[in-house]
Image 1 (cartoon, rainbow, N blue to C red):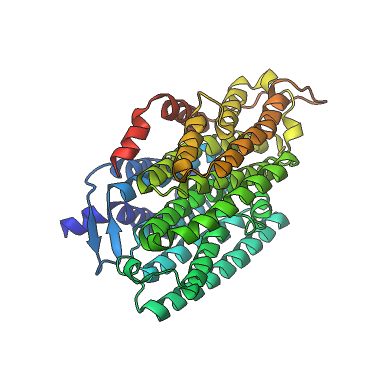
Image 2: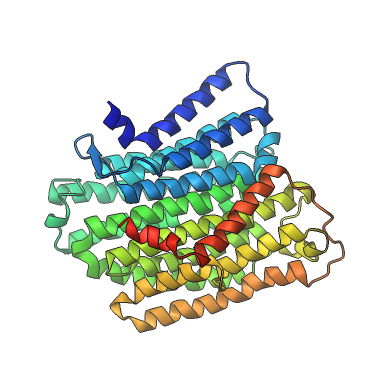
Length: 466
């Protein structure tokens, strides 16, 4: 019994929090301020618990697995959800459905935890559905806004389509191999045409979830229509989880077909980086801007995944996702703080922000510098390790294109920084009061961007897990 609790401690803790919230909802209820503080404390405990008693285990007839690497990946996602509870506490406190929002978000996070621990395609599919369906409801949480309902509709339709493709691929895979176990499949894969078709189907499903071009068309509309908290969860937590799972699936299950998926990833990484950058150049709405920015960032993640060195590939992706959690959530946190106070979401409205809001301006600048990959921020080292991992096969044309796309991204990230520090608009954003929890979350993000970049032990710790 004790081993079972140790193996699934993070998953069981999430289940316990979800049931606690359900009991609170069924009872007389608690004021939002008190309830939010309790949830934040529980999420912090869940994050800290992820660093203890981690070892290699399997359960449920090898359908469930865990290891120090998987535990660390779960801890990264737990950290992201904890930061979301801090950064968007202003909006959450005002919400009439605070309990329901966290039940949905933690249910989606539980699905992602089970997805990371899946070692069988049946559990994999069920976990993916658990991780997806609640997010569609979260997208529709601004019930008074029509655009929020449209975002939820686009989210659920695109998710249903990608799930159908995934299930079709899994059914063909079972038909030709007689198994859906991750451990048994590599010995049965030989790169035949029908197996290549299966790989394409499965990769297409991942591409929908990661917003890889040309499966990205839902992203900007859903990001714009959803509340900032949901957009952040989609951009950071959901993408991070799917990136971890994609690396694991390709390296462990489809390693015998490396030549095939390397070609697919190379082509799609180039297209994704270019399209993401080109569309980000012309965006005025901050949510749509960060949506296409995240698409371009996924292109860089694919560069790291393309490595034929599993240690370099996985470690670079894990390290980059950790940095991405701090950087992207900092940007979204500042944008939400401005939007909730002034109602402004366009980049042009940020003109002269530095004049009255120096703290928000510096945090936003630090986040954008990191996303752009400007040294000495952590984003520079994250992209450096991704490109280094991608260079393992000496495809220098591929790496050159990735490096050139980093230069292109500098323009649109620095455009926002120029707007904040140098441009003067007709109306300057007044001094914005920042709630203590929000400020604490922004400080954590800012410190994370600096610490993970300047202190090498963070990357060494990630590599030491493999």
